[in-house]
Image (tube, rainbow, N blue to C red; front, side, top):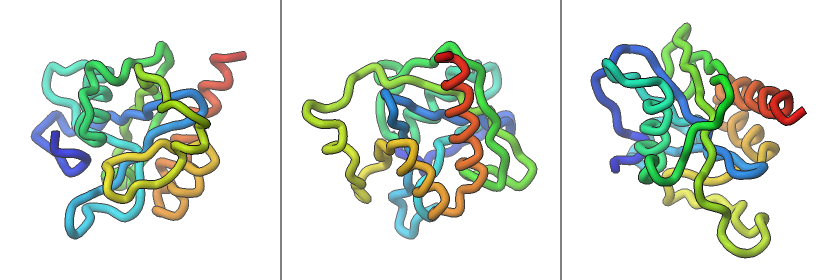
Length: 160
């Protein structure tokens, strides 16, 4: 995979992926030199002609995280949440529907806090919700921050 810098022709319709594992979510960074964007963000991709939105979300996670999304993530049975540009590579006024995905593998052995570090040499990191909010705010990703909060409200409503 090419990581988060990948792109391609599509329909012009953007789809996003918020990968979850317990109380943590994935945010991605650019490893290009110079970086394609500052800080971290929610992965997005353009929908390809004939592609289902949920499949595009899995592809967005696959490409941005450089993983095999078909085996490492699965869509959750929840409606997507809106991500408004300019944020996560979207133009001003563009909207991506961000699908909630779950990691199919559990966390590494040991205390969860041990996996909370940041690795600037990897395409993604796992963030607690609080750390994700702070990282998105530092990155200027206000649309992504609002989307993260909407996702939290959706998850809380589904669990009630």
